[in-house]
Image (cartoon, rainbow, N blue to C red; front, side, top):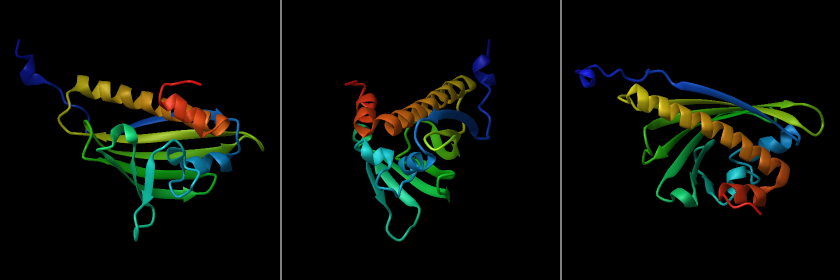
Length: 172
C-alpha cells in the first residue's frame, strides 16, 4: 500500500557492458577510426566536429549536429596503437541520468585483413534513479554499445558515406 515509501534505488557502482564484433579490416585501420587524434576518426568522418583541447593532450571535445547544444568531453586514458584505446566521456550540460562513461576498445588481429574489436563500457548514472529507471537506462546503454560496434564495422568495411547514411537512417 505504501510502496512509494519503500522504493529501492539503483546500485551505486558503475555498470559494465561488453560487446564485440569481427571486422573485415586490419586492426591498424580500425584503431584509426577510434583514435580521437587521427584525422580518419569515425566521428569526424561522419560529420561531427572533433577538436583537440590546446595545452591538454588527450583531451577532445565533440559536437554532433543532432545534439548541437551539447558537448561531449573526452579524455584519453590509454593508447596502445592497434591494440587498446580507452577514454572517459562526460556530456555538458548533462544529458539524461548518465554521469560518466569510460570506453575501452581492444583490438585482436585475426589475420592480415581482419580483426576482432571488444568494447567494454563502464557507465555511472545519477544517484536516486529507481530500479525500474535504472534497468531501462542499462538496457539503453547495452543497445548503444552494440549499435556503436555495428556502425564501426560498417564504416570500416564500407566507408564513411555508408556510415553517415546509416546514422541518418537513410540507406543508399
